[in-house]
Every structure is written in structure tokens, then in C-alpha cells.
Amino acid sequence: MFAACLPTRIITNHCFFASLTMLSLDKLTKQYKTGDLALNDIYLEIPDGQVMALIGPSGAGKSTLIRCVNRLVEPTSGSICLNETELSSLSQGELRRARRRMGMIFQEYALVERLSVMENVLSGRLGYVSFWRSYFRNFPQTDVDEAYRLLARVGLDHMADKRADELSGGQRQRVGICRALIQNPELLLVDEPTASLDPKTSRQIMRLICELCKERKLSAIINIHDVFLAQMFAERIVGLQLGEIVYDGPPDGLTPDVLTTIYGEEDWESTIEKVKEEDFEEKRKDSTSLASGK
Amino acid sequence: MPNEQQAKIKIWQRRDRGHQLTIWACQFIGVAIFVYCWQLVSDNTIWMFVTDAPHQANDMFERMLPPKWEYMDVLWRPIWDTVIIATLGTLMAVVFAFPIAFLAARNTTPSTAFVRPFALFIIVSSRSINSLLWALMLVTILGPGVFAGVLAIGFRSIGFCAKLLYEAIEEIDETQVEAVTATGAKGSQVLNYGIVPQILPAFAGISVFRWDINIRESAILGLVGAGGIGLQLSSSIDTVSWTQVSLILLVILVTVILSEWVSAKIRHSII
Image 1 (tube, rainbow over the protein chains, first blue to last red):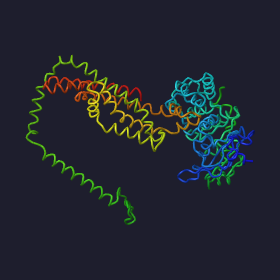
Image 2 (image 1 turned 30 degrees about the vertical axis):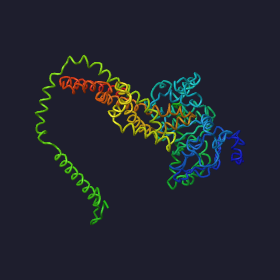
Image 3 (image 1 turned 120 degrees about the vertical axis):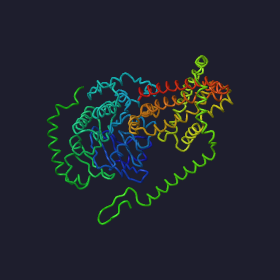
Image 4 (image 1 turned 30 degrees about the horizontal axis):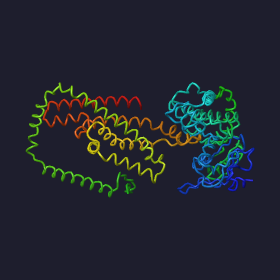
């Protein structure tokens, strides 16, 4: 059924099916100039509204995979199909329009440090406004309203005029989330959202991302190297190793054997025990979650 | 090898023997060159004049004192010109350097093969000519006056500002640029939101620093007729009016101190 996404149909920029699939990757391959094969023939389908965690050791190709989706990294070959649009063959202008439909959240936040929180959030609307409007920071009132609403949702509405580099790590990542959501995306690409956060903030951020995906019925790919967090928050886990998918299934299917295939030999039993305990703790604490408001 | 096995004790040395000998040889050559040059300079110096120097200096110093304060009335205008030359020249340089820097920086240039070498050529040619030489040429072309001075300062400063700025552009954090690109922003918007905020402090610092240098440079441009206080300096020296010369030097000193103070203040408030 994926033949539809391949060259013959690419010309029309439409995929054959799509109603229930948000994103589908077919035969996606990326080889860097150095010769490293970062992704090898990846086939992956993400249904509408699914939050998927992509786990794997460093260098497995997790970042490359999500960067290929919005073409921050150009894939070498293969097809990427976002809700009926074939992304791999778009022209520059079409690609920019397609990028508006994909929000991205980064490791180390990637906020523009010297701009204010509000400017950072509004930069998510750049794809929709003209250069001069954005140059004079003259965004449509609806965008500004939405920015305030999102900031309130993540508990940062009082910080709107602070400079991004004055915020703490968790606060910055929440601004990053707002920037992605104000695009009104169909899909969230999340690259190691918790890599530089402490365990508590990591959980808050992951919970926030997952709650927001539910509220807005978004699909998400979350790259994460922390197996606990992946199991705790994602509906589906995909394990990547050396550019190939070695596991695709529910979070509780991550047995020691599976983890060994993904990461290599290690004592996984104790890890899994710990996840079960924490899972229970988390559910109890859920009512006191920081991400309140709205 | 840095560590050799000796009676089961691992000896560690910072460098191995060959490397150490090379360093000694280089140091020896350095000293030899210094001694040779000293010899050369000494042979070409008329030592009688040098031994006489303290006397001459003392004599000149006496003739410079006291500064001719009433000459100040004539100097206000040239000082003003000097500051104007420096300021307008810097402004002109900054306006041209800004786009050139983006063309020269590896990560923002439209083409590494064609545009970048061209931008680098502009930078190098501007930098390789001293502002006094620029002024000399421009006075020949445009005639004497402040305008030639402004252009001379401007031409010299374009390369300086563009070079420092393009180095700053190459050092920006690319993930911030990536993040703005990922929102679907156009190239111009990525520049405006992702790159410019990151280089703005460097840009301001470079401009003020260059303005500070230009105040000093424009003070001597008058020597070749390109306006400013240097004109009075050269005519005072020509007419051996040492009391005027001392006043001019004093005035330049005060102006430079003031400009240094101003630029330090500005830099401090921006960064």
C-alpha cells in the first residue's frame, strides 16, 4: 500500500491514503557525506493522535529521523508523507508551508536567547506573516492572544516580557513548547526535550507535552534516551539501533531482551522494576501537577 | 615516546627528545636573528645624535612650553571636524560592513564558491591600505577637505568591521537558527529572528571600538589635507610654532580620552 507514496505519486504531492495516518515514512534513508548511514530503509507509520517515543542509544539516528521529517536534514532517499503531502520532493516555498504544520521542540530549548519570551513564542507564527510585519513585531492580534493563552496554559504568562536567557531550564522548555504549539501544528517533532533538565522538571515537561497532545489531538514523535520517561508517557515505543528499527510496540513490551537488542548488554531487570514503582508514584501525584491553569 | 618503560617505573615526560631538541633549535635561531638585527641597527645608527637626544628633547620641550592657549579659538572647528570625520566614517563603514559580513560568513553566504571570495577580497583590500594612504589617494581625486577624510576613514574601517562581524556570525549557535527555520520562516525572517539577535552585541561592540580608533586616526588625516585637526598640526610644525603644536597634542589627548570614556560607557550598556 505504500507504493502510492513512491515516485509516481510524488509528482502530485499527494499520498494515496491518509485519513488515519498522520505521518508515514517509507524506505527513508539518510547517508551523511562522511559515509555514515544514519538511517537505513526506515518504514514507520504514525496514526493520527498518537504519541510515540523513539528510543535508542546515542548515534542511533533518532535526531536524524525527526530532522528528516521537516527536512532540516535532507534525506538521501525514501518518502515522507505528512497527512497527504509528500514532503521529500517539495520546493523551498512549499517546504516552508509544510513546516508550518510541524512544530518542533528541541534539546537545550533552542530559544533565541536575546529575544523576549513573547518574541520567541510569536516566532512560531513567522511562516504565516510577512517579513515586514515580523520585522516590526506587528503580529495579528489573534496571534498575540493565542501566545498569551499558551503562556498562561504553561504557567508563564507573567514572564512574557522577560528575556529568554533569564529563564530557568524548565521555563525555557515551556516557552519552546509554546513556540511549537502556536504554529497550530498537526504533528509535533520533539528532540530530547528533557536532556538538560533535572528528573522532576523532566517529568513535568513530558507530562505537559503529552497533555497538550491529548488536548489538541496532536501526533508526536518524541526522541528520548531515558527509557523510564518513554515508558511512563508514550503510547507506543519505537527502538532505533544503528539506523534501523529494532522494536515497535507498546511500552510494557520493553522486556530486558528487547532493551538488550536496542542498547546492548546491561542489567535491565532493575530498570524495569524501578519504572513500575515510579509509574505508580506519578499517578498519585498527577493531581498536583504543575501544568495547571487554562 | 613520551613514556618509556624503565625498571617497571613509567617515566612521563612532557615531550620526547626529538621534539624537545627541535624546540631548542628554534629558540636558538630566534636569539641568533635578534642578535643579527641588533647589530644591523647599531651599525646604521649615528650614535652621536642618540647621545645628544636628551639635550635635544629637553630643548624642544622648553620651546613647547607654555602651550599657546589663545590658539584654542582657532582649534574648536578642526576638533569638531575630526570628530565628524570619525563618526560619519564609522557610520559609513558599518552600513557597508553589515551586508558584506553576511556574504563573507561561511554559514550565511549565498555561495561559498563565488560570493564569499569576492566579499573576502573587499575586506582584505580595505584592510591592507592604511587610512592615511586612503586619504592621500582620495585627496588627489576629490581635493582636500572633510569629505575625503570621511571616505578615507570609511574605506579603511569597512574591512575591519566586516572581518570581526563575519567571525561573530560564524560563531553563532546554529540550533537557534534551526529552530526558527523549523517554524516555516522565510530566509529573511530567519536572519531577522535567528541570526541578528545573536550578533547584535558583537556588532555594537565592534562599531564603538572602531569609532574609538577612528577618532585617533582622523586626528592625523589633516597631515595629508583630508580635514580635521591634523591640518593645524602640520602647519604649526611647518612654521615651527612649537607652543601651538603642544596645545594641539594636548587637545588630541583630551579628545581621545573622552572618546575612550564614551565608548567604554556605550559598550558597557549594550553588552
